[in-house]
Image (tube, rainbow over all chains, first blue to last red; front, side, top):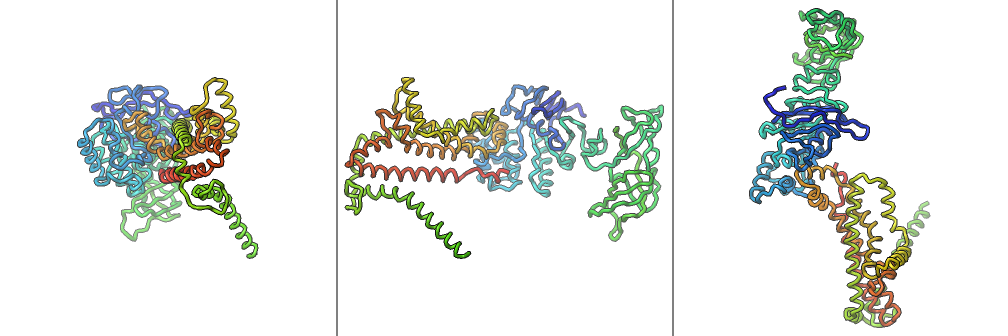
Length: 367
Length: 269
């Protein structure tokens, strides 16, 4: 975590229950200024509650919320320096596009001229110029999303909150809007907090990601670290695909390194210990499908094992294989990009192949 | 089989026509005889005249009763719609304890005979020495109009998206401003429909007004009193005709408003 930026939003030991359901369980986190921060998790993990809490639409049972250097305990939703893009956009159906965007400025006491200019600039910024007279029901999904964005951004908030804003859009529009949102965030330079259950969205847009599950934060890290260095098996399974193989600690060396027996892959050496490391500890090692390389011949790699293809599926840009490595009970998934020349057929079911990997590509998790 | 079906169709046609006949023929009698140049309601018609209408407009007591009725109807419509708006808002937005039974109590005046309401209000107001007259009638009419207001406004407000109000708060509007700028404009067709419907209910109501109006008769009560004098009957018919047309127009307008922008549930998804 970089320390030169001061937090734009800070939660300190925040908890929130709905009846018996713990939506947020003692959450502490700091979001930096001008950061694109994503909260990623399955539905019901408390991510939307956290966003609504920051917006002032929910109130914490305990804990402290700071926006900038102000405690938000006594500040109502309409007094907070943050604005929200709602999941269903919540565009006012009785107002035109222009009036929707102007809504947040009604209390600002602007002169008519200044107001019109502001709205025009905002509509230009989200590529809705010329549509200010339209009614919301005459807009497409993408346009409604832009109205919601413009309506929030025109108030020049310190923090923009986005509650699954791209969920209702089709795939190609979603990818385009992901790109635009990222560009927009960099050009306006304010903090964006995005709530999503879409891991690709979080990985491609964010500076940092918080992975949540059952009201707790499992890990906060950059997209790279979240993917490459997940701190627990929950994060590892939630982001991308992961092969897990049961393993046993064989020896703990004096220099801190450990030797682990992985069935089928032999004896692997790791430099980091697990918290409860000891000889004979049963745990799991894990490797991403694309970190395993498949070939028909044995390679020079440090780690190269032989196995049988159980299934082989061709997906165009890549192929996926299930392979049982000799001596390992659980089949592993291998993903290979189809970079070979045309006419080259991928290994088929029942074929004997070799898998190679860098030993450093393996991760370890306690059970 | 085909013969059976033909008989069935014919029966259905006969029933429909009979129904319309019984429903509308008596009402058509009113305008017909209001232009008939005779004191007596009997065929054959004597001749065309507008003198009953002239007589009507020259009668100060009938115009006084009309004014009383309009005042009562306006007050009852506004009051019951205001109360209905608040109740509908509470019932659709907030979690109200005992919501079902509360709604049952609100809807109760729909099934309690107006006769009972009239008698009990009369007894109570007399005991309380509150006095009878216009305000007593308004009280009774609000009681019977309120369920209609609640029903109309609840059906309007149930389709509301809660996030619209949250968005308004998030965009810097206070709770009152949110009500004023978001909730009320969206509920407006329901509010107008409620005002118009309750206005007609109060305007037409007889029993409660009969018990409570004392020496300030409403129009229906006044007309009832006039029926004793045969010579007054034709101008009462003229008045009835005028009221029918105004009532029809008002109700049709209310219904048109309600349907024009009923909340579109599929569009808000």
